[in-house]
Length: 347
Image (cartoon, rainbow, N blue to C red; front, side, top):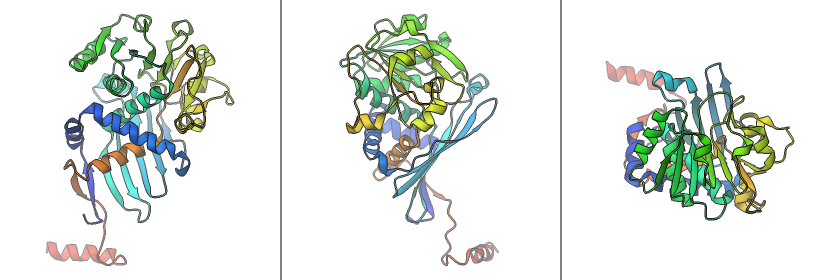
């Protein structure tokens, strides 16, 4: 393919790719790519995402590079959008060669972000959750819920998901979409009820506020908490006392201390970086009665891994279209001449 032609994965083609491979396979394989990249964590450029906040949401850029490829994601988070019939989160991303600076992939990332977020959650739980955990409470049954359930089923062996949302319509939607998945589903009338018998708790609500989805008395010993919904300043889901009882694991502390559940704690409160657990440089769960918490906010390396995964799939799958997006004249010094030649051809 010519250097000026970039593979573009539209929403339609992303859906075709995911359906061709199967969502559970895609999330399992993305988790593998993330784990590979976390094992070489120190080779990446790292910076907190560049965020533009407003009263109604946030727009962010998430860049990183491993020295050979550069990637970024554009993503928004607007909780109010749901009431307007719009997505809370939308995204697109780009992968480029560092050597030339030329893009090698442009893709939708609204669907891809949902897949990689769930893959990251399940990957963390595989390293942190109690051994033999089979039941998960899923609190917040919106756009991310089904992906989380399927990822935990495929990657962690979860077989029973207990569903709760303040909107019963969301719970019915989630249960309907997961029918036939092989999961046992229980609709619950409260968050407390959803947590009965659950060894894993996933919170993925969308309100842009300092909420208390879980209180301290709701979380028993030996639980793993996967906190997904708190992902920007002023947006949390857990009571502070839960954090004080938990061993906390994060992606990138400079970002998580601003955006995650730990924004409620002192800046020097101890946390463990998940990449260190994956490489064996730090301990994960150390006790069967320990409460572990993955304070998930999403980090650029995870998106890089997802972009790398899609790029690799396109080597054998036809789910992209050529996009003529780079001006590349025959003589690099004669960009204006490229315009003149186009004018002559048009005439």
